[in-house]
Length: 136
Image (cartoon, rainbow, N blue to C red):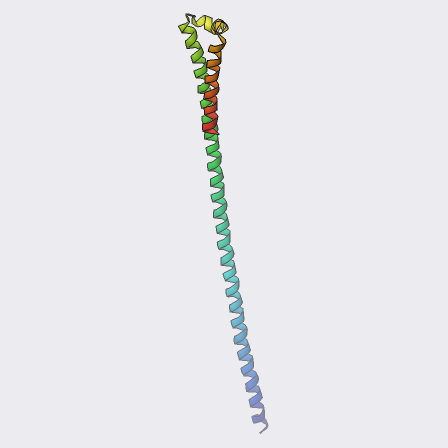
C-alpha cells in the first residue's frame, strides 16, 4: 500500500517535469524565432539605408556633373561673347579702311567715336548678360 501512495505523487511530478520541459523548449524556439525576425528586419533596414545612400550619392553626382557642364557652357558662352566683341570691332575697323596690322596696334580703336565704342561694349554686355541668364 505504501507503493500505491507514492505512485500518484511521482506520476504528477514526472508529468509536471515533462510538461515544464516542453514549455521550456517551446519558449526557447519562440525566442529564437523572434530574434531571427528582428535580424531579418535589421538586415532589410540596412539594405534599404544602403540603397538610399547610393541613390543620394548618385543624385549628388548627377547634380555635380550638371553644375560642371553648366559652368563649362557658361565659360564657352562668355568666350563666344568676347570673340564676337573682338570680331565686331575688327570688322568696323576693316570697313573703315584700317589694315590688320593697324587693328592689332589698336590704332583703329583710338579713332572710333564714343558712340561706336559704346555700341560695341553694349553688345558685349548684353551677350554676357544673356550667358549669365541662360547658364546660372
